[in-house]
Image (cartoon, rainbow, N blue to C red):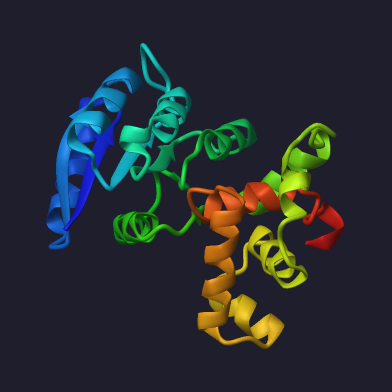
Length: 222
């Protein structure tokens, strides 16, 4: 059973998401939070598998709440799926850097939202259409600092692992990477697992960020 915490400042929205989650036989809503602060507290108490996190909330916004959940060893295994009505670059960029595993708009179809929860709970990244393109544009405007440790960390990876990381950064699935590199799916999964370990990444979303930070993905490569 996948345990889900719903965080949104609007009671009607929270209730709707909770009802939707509880309609799925493999999902269970374990609580509701009205503020980012409450979301952090409930995440520590309930240890859900996934938090559906709104961005704009009082007391503490969803980005800061995500950052605290991701940074706390007690909630290190809690995945955050950002849900918002605001399709703005800075939210996507900030949410993924804060440690979010996914980003969807609130007008996502119910079936797609339930599928997204399962994807994020399994440790994969889930980005709404167009997000990867906008992230690349954001890195064009704000190139990574020379002091960024990612480049040094990439020195510990093999040539093949960097090939895989580049394709992850371009938004390819494991199956697509396997086809592109003429590898078996299990081999690609092994490479992705090693990259997660070597780069200290929580999930695939952070591998995407690492690919950009390390200069492996650029606008000309999309």
